[in-house]
Amino acid sequence: EAAEWARRELASYGLANAALEPWGARRGRGWVVDSYSVELTEPRYARIVASPRAWSPPTAGVVRGRPVVLELRDSADLDRHRGELRGAIVLAGPAAPRDTAHQRWRFQPPARRRTPAELDSMARLADPGAPRDYWEDAGGYTGRVRARLRFAARLREAGVAALLEPSRNEYGVQVSSYQAYDTDVSGAVPAFVVARPDYDRLVRLAERGGPMTVELSLRAHYLPASDSTGYNVVAELPGSDPALRDEVVMLGGHFDSWNPGTGATDNAAGVAAAMEAVRILAAVGARPRRTVRVALWDGEEHEDYFGSLGYVRRHFGDPETMRLLPEHARLSAYFNLDDGTGRIRGVQLQGNAAARPILAAFLAPFADLGAATVSIANSGSTDHVPFRGVGLPAFNFIQDPIDYESRTHHTSLDVASALLEEDLRQAAVVLASVVYHTANRAERMPRTELPKPRGH
Image 1 (cartoon, rainbow, N blue to C red):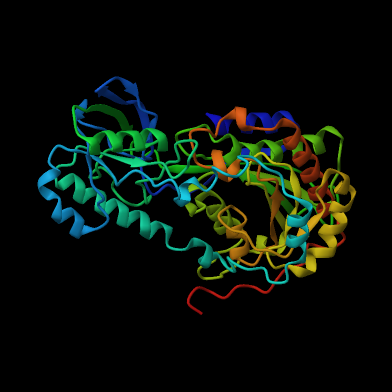
Image 2: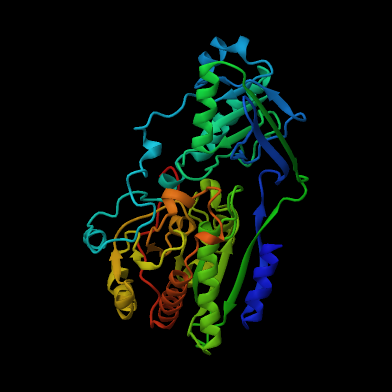
């Protein structure tokens, strides 16, 4: 429904070819939460702040009992505590000591902007750093999720009724996932991620002894496997130069999000700025020489970039084999926005040194808005990575962090109230201008050396 709304909105701006473009088949069933509850009913009532782990199977009705605190890290731990697991609600480990890393934000401002010294340091970098290629960025995420799922299946075989895990974030409920996209999750144990203060409270009550009862339930269902086609939202402002209009400049952000919030900063913010950027260009009657294409990506989360990777494979080439398609030669650049609600402070070159003077000139008019930093740095974990994987110029913008990592990233606090409208206005204006000037250059954006096929 949201993707169809965005398609209609882009068409209403006067953009051409607004469509839901299939990128391929999803490798897992969709998951829908119908209702859930976690409550402390004894020694006194308290509503526990929690969220189901993504793709968690439902509970068998209401589960109630006294939780047990067990640190189950591996099969040896599971075997050692097997007698305590049948029908148990398991709290996954002790309360956090006050000096642990999860409280690293406690003595820092929860929201901040980048300082001049920080931006200067980024501009002076000589080594782009990691991730240096698509495969270094991928980093075995799916394998780790599959291992977690296998262990969860062993918990269910041992009779565990439900698992309560602590949030990694001090402020909101930061969820993790059961899904590896090509794995059946129905054998996992139902699991919730609990806000850190509530989790620590439950652990201390359980360890102290005395009466204690927790009641929980999760109603959820999976969508049919046949409902598996994934879509990106695309639209374009056609190029005006007969010699260049078949070439393309792209911009975008990702459309999907995690389940406990509404994905406002990750990444409705980037999507909104990209949509506003092309609306501005259409509204002022801009006639870029090259075609400007906006793409709102599906399937970015879980670090597999299914939407953008599927698009790259359909249009440009395969990062695994490096077999390239004709459109590969016609893309000038892709610009990505996916670091929260903060205003743009500059751009990361992803090791493309030849692009430095070009992008520095494009950003220079926005120095008074704080958007002039150009850094050689690489960055990963978002949708420019598949473009880089086939050797295309792809750039990620530097943004003010605000409270992205400290509070909103993948948490229950990632809702619309976390957005800063003025920052998003600034980002949209900068993005519109950079994309427009890239589309009007006499030449395409310079490229780096093509990556080798995987294994070479």
